[in-house]
Amino acid sequence: MGNSCSYRLAEVYEWDVRQFYPAEIPYIRPIERHEVPTAVEIITENFGNEWDQLAMEDIMAMWDDIHLRPIWYGAFMDGVLLGIIGLVPAWVDYNFFQGQWLCVRKAYQKQGLGKLLMNHLIEEIRLRGKDFPGNMNAPKCLLISTADHNIDYYISNWGFKVIQHIEENRNLMTLIIG
Image (cartoon, rainbow, N blue to C red; front, side, top):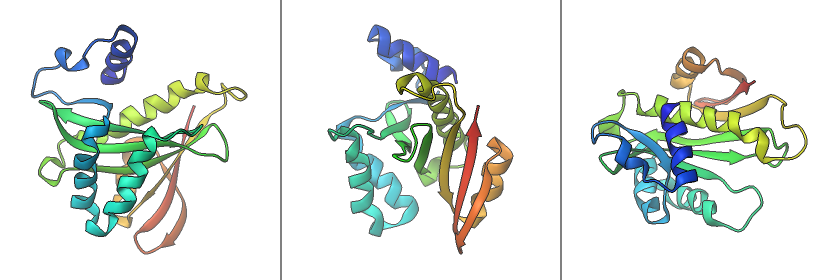
């Protein structure tokens, strides 16, 4: 959460958030267009090369001229992109969001970067209520899809619930964020 707050201050005051973190401390910020190939590389390292085109399209939508653009956040350490997650507002309801492509370079997994990214995403969703007219104070809903072996991770860390087992290794999960 401290990363989110610092980054928001950086947006307001146009500071470079990197000056506040020593090289060995990870920080979260939106990725920049020139970092997209690295983000796609992280995704394909985790999911396979067959996902490269879809991942590229998903991330590049961040710069499309559409009403509900996704935002892609990166986990950086010493200026190097090590993990990524997408926040995608859902068209069905302004209080529904999708979390996409949570993944970390394999060499940096199991070090808390994925948890840091998801915590950041949840905090961003909490803050999004004031962005949209209508149900500003309504609970928000985060939807994710995950493999069977990740279910317990999402339940124990954040309280996600499985709402649909679609097929082997495809589960739809949700988290209500008050």
